[in-house]
Each structure stands twice: as structure tokens, then as C-alpha cells.
Length: 114
Length: 246
Ligand SMILES: Nc1nc2c(ncn2[C@@H]2O[C@H](COP(=O)(O)OP(=O)(O)OP(=O)(O)O)[C@@H](O)[C@H]2O)c(=O)[nH]1
Ligand SMILES: [Mg+2]
Ligand SMILES: [Zn+2]
Ligand SMILES: [Zn+2]
Image 1 (tube, each protein chain N blue to C red):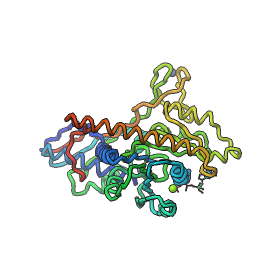
Image 2: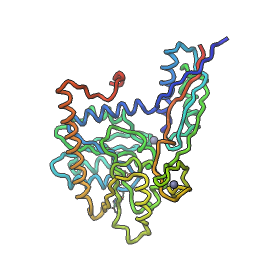
Image 3: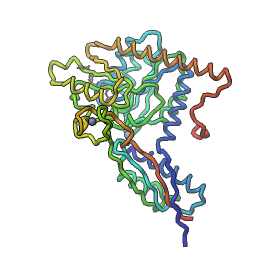
Image 4: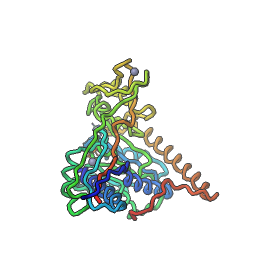
């Protein structure tokens, strides 16, 4: 459900950008999606195929680069992927703190045809 | 032959939502309204918590926006207590977003300075990802959900400005591991205050209300400072893009 308005937003941003560049169509859209962004790639593609009809995005392929969240150890500074039910660093055992890695949600690039 | 071109965009998809949220925040700060985004899983006691906090608040008028997928039971409940309450139904959407709140706030007449509580949709996942114009994100968690929740839903705990641990009257019947819970909360959010309360006995809410009152005063102090800046001709606007949404 929650991917619907977000997909509209993706189409709007991509179209605005493509229009400025006088594109006749958008061939692909590359998204960077962190696992903690809360967005599901398959749902975005599904809504995209429906909402993009009649826009410059019609027929475009969505490519998604997933990013796995990492914590930063407060003891030794190691960046690590956490284990289930724990925030402990695999190197030294101290707890990690959250980082921005894994929260990404942006359009990296588009491929256009002119 | 078509000319195919790859262009970098680096466009944050949340920007528009955040931009609208910033407007709502600025507008309500100007009107001396402190905004609290109340989040938590279904049935954790969001509405019960609001009632208990409001009962303990002094000198600040309470306003409530109730976000629900499709009922208005909580709204009727709060109105029956004489609280100015406004309903938003999302008809399926799992969180409130900035445009919904922006539109709702336009139609509310805030007669007096006070605190606007926005009860988000009962959901521990996505409300944490969307700013709606709040000064403060309040997370309601409970001893009945189990002590592993910070580990399973880290984002909600990371983003919270204040955490309420509710239903503590039920502790004798549960094996809630408070140390494990607090260790998880601390790893995610070093500074956040955690208030233990019971919506059944009313215990602990005076402290929460006092904390809110202090925060609301501080927000107002920032607001006065902001006006002094404007007097000297310094324009204190956070963004430089055009206002396209109004
Ligand atoms: N024992 C006990 N019950 C509580 C407490 N707080 C709330 N409840 C009960 O929990 C149930 C849900 O409370 P609500 O305040 O409606 O919860 P909510 O989070 O607003 O629920 P939704 O809006 O439906 O997501 C009600 O039956 C409350 O009476 C508490 O501290 N102790
Ligand atoms: Mg409720
Ligand atoms: Zn370490
Ligand atoms: Zn959602």
C-alpha cells in the first residue's frame, strides 16, 4: 500500500528531470534502496507498471540496488551487519550504534532516449 | 537510431514529504503549537496515553488528530472528554504523511497555544520513516509486547525523542526482561528518556506531562529567537526551492 504514493513520486521526479533534458522516453530508473528504508522493490515495480502508463516512464525498467544496514561499533569502530536480536560487534563484543547505511532511498540515475 | 543517455539524479524521494513537513512545523511553531507524533503498534495504549497525559497537563491546551485506517472510535472517545479532536482516515494507508497533516492543519483553528498530539496509524514500522511536521516523536511500547522489540524494530526506537513503556501494571504476570530492553534502546538511541507508566493506574504520567511542558517551552524559546533574527533582516528559511504544494 505504502509504495503507491512513493511510486508516484518516483515517476514525477524522473519525468521532471527527463523533460528538462528533452527526452522522448525513459528507458530505466536506478533506485538505491536501503533495507531499513521500509520500501519493497517488487511492490514499486508493480505499481510502477500501472501508474507509468501514458507518461515518459511507460515501459521503463526499474533497477534496484539494495543496501544492507550496518552498525558502527562504539568500541573499535568496525562497521558490521548485526545478528538477529543483538547489536554486538563481531570483533570486540561492544554494542554498535546506528548509521545511515541501510536507510538510503533515492533515484541514482535514469537512462533516457532523445 | 535513438540517442540513449545515462544521467545522474541523486534525488531523494522523501524530499517533498520532508519539505511539506518543515512547513507545517514552521507554521505551527509560529502559532505556539508543539506537535507530538505518537507512534506504536496497534493496541499499545496510544489513545489511553494521550488521555492520561492530557489529564496531567497544566496551562497548555491539548489538540488531537486521530489517524486511523477507517474508524472514528478514538475520536468520539476523546471528544466525549471535551478534547478538541480531528479525524483523519487513511482508508488502507499504513502511515500518516506530511501532505495529509498539512491539509488537516489548515482547517484547524488553534484558539490558544498548546500541544497538538497526532496519533499515528497503529504500526511499528513505517510511521517512523515519515516526518509529518512534528517537534517530537513519541514511541509507545509496552511490557506485553516483549523485551526484544528494540532489536526487531530498531528504526522506531532509533528515531524516537521520547519512549513510553506502558502497561507496567502487568509486569507481575510477565517475564519482561527490562535490562535487555534498555540495553537495546541505549544502543540505538543514547539520550532518549524512557518513562515507565500504566494507563490502567495512571502511574508515571505526571512526569511525562512535565517533560512535554518543558519541551514545549523550549520550542517557544527557539521561536522567539527566530523572530529576533528576522528583526535584524536575517531570513531564517530552511529551503530554497519554490513552494509548489499550496
Ligand atoms: N492493563 C493495562 N491495559 C491497558 C493499559 N493501557 C491501555 N490498556 C488497554 O489496552 C487496550 C488498547 O488501548 P488503546 O489506548 O485503545 O490503544 P491504541 O494504541 O490507541 O490502539 P489503536 O488505536 O487501536 O492502535 C485498551 O483495552 C486499554 O484499556 C495499561 O497500562 N495497562
Ligand atoms: Mg488509538
Ligand atoms: Zn568492535
Ligand atoms: Zn506505511
